[in-house]
Length: 401
Image (cartoon, rainbow, N blue to C red; front, side, top):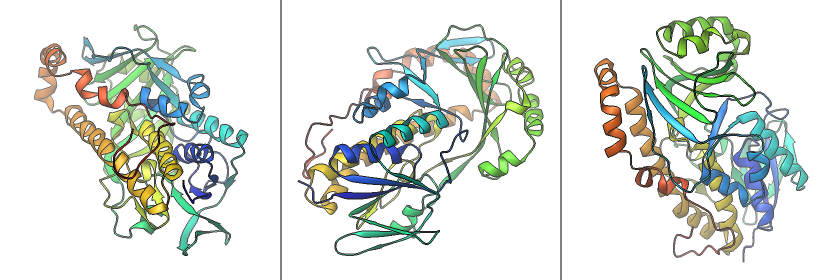
């Protein structure tokens, strides 16, 4: 039985509220401290929750509230020009769910508040000091908070990560800046279909919106990273001109962009990935979510892995007798899984970055590739069929699911 009774959770995005809910179910009182002055409504774009992510939300009774606001994706298609090929899917698993990040954040925030989890906004962490019996967080406003442990759920630009290891690498810029919008143009595909399209000058994706129109996303090559505020400071009409020029020869990319309003274009900021870290924890501090592992968005697993890690950390702290053994078990339980997902995403990115010759061959090679190389049970089966057994005890000597 754990000796941990209280926790400081730094970061109120996705992993933070889930960690606080899971810790509460583990008998640990958690308070969330978020640097933003309020809930982050309107920040970020659409993200995908895989079946394993929804299964992990079930452990904190958040799955139904999240699926209620999400769009189910039952079919995925790869398109090059006018050639379309259905991508293999797993049998017997729930559909992918697409949800706007700000809506997901709001639902998780409200669930945490309903469960009695305090969430304090405008509290930016600047330092933490440990003692033999606890840890004290120091915030930019001069305030402090003390608890038994401190959980860093503060994203790719994590302050907690640098406190754990000052030499830890920071996030790597992928060279892409994300945009999305909803077009008035209606694509001729069934609802619940997501299309990954290789255009003449770039890659994009789209799916029908339940309320009408088509939601699309584009990753624009960018020489240097732009923060969200910096990207949104550029007039949307400027970005829209660049995007329309890049996809002027694509069908339906051209029509999607031409029937989208520049005023409704959403810049979601530069895309980053986290390289492998040597240390996820030190003393009473530990990382969860994107602060520790942020795979490329090509994985379709970033948010789901963050939710999983939050739940698994709570299990480890619940079942093991001290902080050191709990964190060691958490590391063993998670590291191999997230690094395999990151490696798979890296292989997908190489395909997306194919040159002109490779793109010319794709329409010919796609059907053969799908039939021979894309075995869903081998490629995504271990990821999407993963279910955390909340009730099973975690032991120090082996990796429990």
